[in-house]
Amino acid sequence: MTDKENCWKLVPLKRSYDMRSRAILAFNTATANGADRDDALQAAWEAEFHAAPAPSAQSGPDTDTEIEALFEGRAENTAAISAQSAVNSEVGQ
Image (cartoon, rainbow, N blue to C red):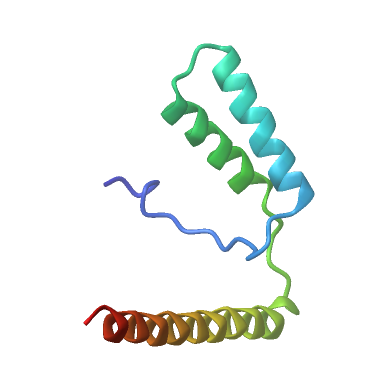
């Protein structure tokens, strides 16, 4: 891997309108120019990535709160799925 492939950039949890629209435009342009789906998706991802706003100093606490909420929701969903699987297993026996 090159240094360029190891680079990181923080991006928002929720995509902005600008990020989505640039991705769509890049995908459509790439496919119109004959790119295959993989290359078109790469172009869309790069366009969206470059359109991401720079993180602000105030975004830290909100971001942490949003991340915690996402993980809490995931844990609740996992618990519900596990409980339903247990019920289904008992019914099937």
